[in-house]
Image: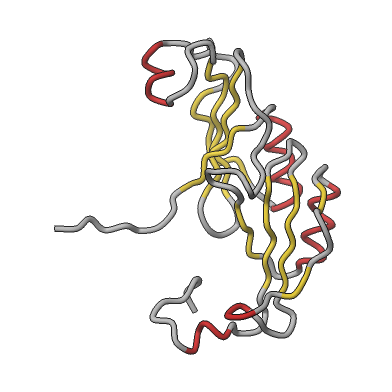
Length: 172
């Protein structure tokens, strides 16, 4: 018997500073803190069990974990680590989860909010094409203050994929 998948519960994101990242998501996306799983007031987690469970180098320490919630959709679980060496954020051309897309009503205001919160746009919003096309349907890639890629997407006009799709991206 196959299991029942309900959807994405949360997306894990490692950040250089959990407080700064929390502020960015609050200011840019109206996120809220749901809970702290592990705080900087506690001793850093450096055990072999922790590094094995997470698949990280033995010289790294888990410093803090916080779950933040967006107005709709999955949560984002923020992680902060210390010690060892950390690589900078990947780009869309690197292997691995490359970006998180945020569905917004007003893409220009969302870009403004990201920039006000310390992020930056890669380029101005452009029209969606093909099965996503429609009047006012736009997307824009941006960077967080620490360099992770985020996409803003807005589609006020029904997208052509809906004509043949057996499933919608968002419920009606």
